[in-house]
Image (cartoon, rainbow, N blue to C red; front, side, top):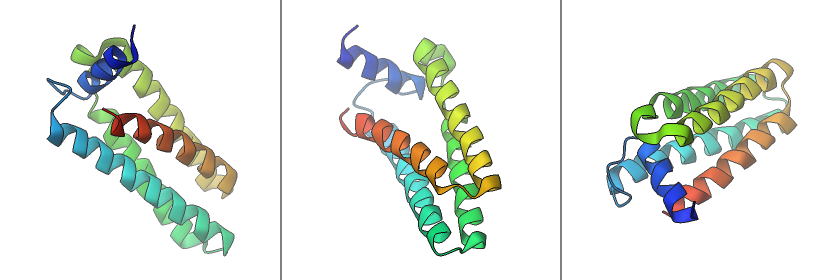
Length: 124
């Protein structure tokens, strides 16, 4: 399967009828931007031991990941939607663990994966 076909299937995983559906793509990118920014802020807050801000930003990141999960369209997206769901489930679990442990390394790992996924969406 070509990379283009994979991206089309990924777009369909979010309910996009066509690869050129700008509003759907923009919404997904905005969700990625939001979670990435919240996780960066959480990482910075942990550096200065601001645990309350870190906690709040990690929770916001978790909520955005949940939103990415519920917007998946399994009928149109097939296996790509299932794979994305599993990834998001792992991200969510990792953020819960990072929040409990106040672990900036775990937050950074999730953020980096999300940045890679965002970059893929940007290329569509």
